[in-house]
Length: 210
Length: 210
Image 1: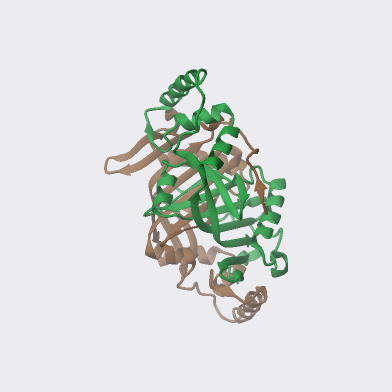
Image 2: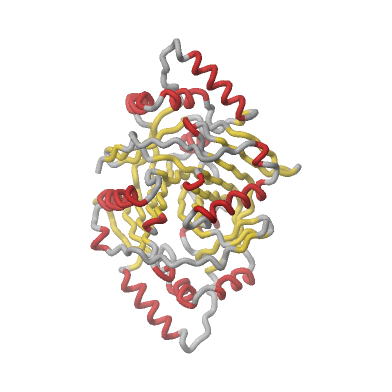
């Protein structure tokens, strides 16, 4: 499978990002860009979570909440990402919104949320998703789709007569940002990149070379 | 900026991925999915590159070629990603194609391509992009947009009378995959995940729990 894509070339021309627009609060700018993305993107909450035990791994997860200035998502704590975070709590989050030619990168530290917070979200999900979370040992090898479906059937039957309880190994992570980078595509690859870094004195804002 | 997105909930229903469809060659399956993505995605070549010096970092780069079973992109070797790869050549690539409810993850080793290959691509780019690559010390802090634009003007003037030469620190990386994971969204979070891992005996195929 050889594939030459070098002729594909597109200039980014829709927006720009000045220091004035960026302001001094990365949360305010995130809020602004996220609100615009919700109007033009099919799934604005999709973000790429990158973790690194000994080597980098990434996957899409869904942003479920921003509270106390932390970004919250949910997962199986025994999954590959959970094991990576156990080894190294430094993670990165990335939003790429092609319709706006924008990217937001967040580097931060992931911490488990409280049991109460995990419970609250778990029980708000549809019963099928609750059972799915119980049935699936995330990232483990299974013999085939049938093994999963049999397990779901079995558990669905069981939970007709028993209360569903959130498994201990399923819950939320909250990411506390250390660095935000806002990237706005511009013509001839001369993109606007504004970075905010957390310091003892508040957020430091800098423009990066594209 | 508090933001509660927990009510947003979408089932993935468009496709499935059986072992029969997956086959035994991850490149064949990549080719198939990529061809479909080129029809339905605005920028199918966009992939998230994750690197990890001591902590994970990710950003979107564009896939420029698949040749010799390696995935090629170009960058400034002195950029943050370049320095990360110098420290740790293990990288991950991620394609997320929302229109197809599909994700492909590739874990592999990044190596610099030959000078000839970097030259060939560099000189195929528009002059503005060539000058942009020379003007920009990627990821370095700059005083403002004006610093960049002044430098571009200066270089554009200079290169009216001098040949443009690819800077040594600009070139390609080729990623040799060790693991592919093909993820197809399915209802109730019971997604199809088929993983191929490189072994001495060829590619090992396994289904992962969602």
